[in-house]
Length: 590
Image (cartoon, rainbow, N blue to C red; front, side, top):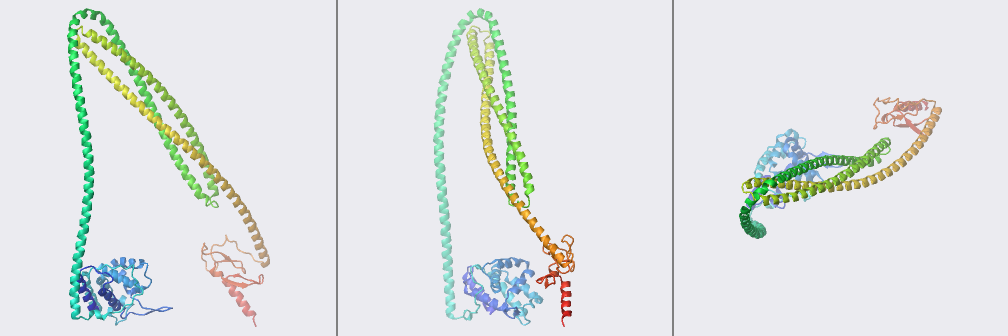
């Protein structure tokens, strides 16, 4: 039957042409036949309640013989719906078929017959040569592709019955097989066409999305082109205007030069007299430039000082943030430690004192930072005033420069020989003026940066104020925690007083018992090992006093109870005292 089921399964699977499911009848019959083959000659294991006869035991051996089978064993054990070993064995067979390694696993079992003899009788199928033949036939199942769902099936309660009608061939069955083959091919073609249709739909949707994105990008490009064209037209118009203005300026300069050529001869004599005055003006302009350069250097030095102060403030803010984070961590630790107040009360008090010292230091740092901030604001105001004065001086210098240039131009027209020299002087003055302009712009940019820095510092001061508020709230929480801590300490003190009173009462009772018995009990601290078994005492091995001899024993050596003369009720007694008392009782009996 194993040969017929394996051959029929291979032929039907090849004619079917697709992956096999768990509902495929030849596959179901194959698992039933394999189950019967593995059950043949299986030894019965007796237990207290029932007889156990399952094939899960030998299949579990495969993990030790074949290391690759550990994955199947682990996955079978992890399945939630399986409760019996037979269900696990059925799931193991299905997983081995899907892995295409059933023949390899069973071959390892058949080779180790010494191990199989523990599970099978000597006449079992797996112990004889027929088992090797079946394993050889199982190699052909590697051609089959199976996709079985093991989680949803009820493998524990399935009834394994072989259907012999499947292996009886008729002419009608042959015709039905041919029809089934044709239907399978038609279904395959239908599935292929559906997959092609799905792929085409996906490509069409992707193309539509691409077309939409291209249209959006095209509209954006058209808008950008229109904007660029408008900009080009505006630039061309400006260029034409500039050219026309340039031509007008050239015409005016030419006319002015012709007029000046006539006046040059008359103004040659006047120039000699006015030359001394011009030299004096030139020296005064140089002095003003030097003063302005010195002012610029002073402003730059003050800016460097402010930058250094800003860096110091940033460092102080970072230190503050670190301290605040540390305080938050300590507060979290304090909250966690409050849950274990009974064990760590003294450490909590020390940590609270340390946190108060840190809070005082941080308050001092915050006050220092506020003072520094006020100083910086005052320095910034002074800088703004100085800059305003420098701007006024610069405007006056510009006005004087303009007057001087006009006078030079009016007098240069009268001088033909020294026109080139004066033009050079004018170029130098223009360059100096441009340098001063650039310097002024840089000063304005630096002022803007300083204003931004001031706004940033103001924001930081606001954050410090918020942190102050949080700090005050944390102080309130700390005070509340202190109150809770003091209340718990008082409760612990009361408990300690009650415990001390109860201990005193217990000691009085023990002394009364000793007086009654006339025995000396050993102290718990002196005994470290049991007197009988000589094992060391621990948390699991507790100490117990014998009420007869007063020695200390473990629970195993003192689990007897007998009535003594001092106490009519049964009391704990060690094994040796128990034996002596029983002997005395037996000797006293007639």
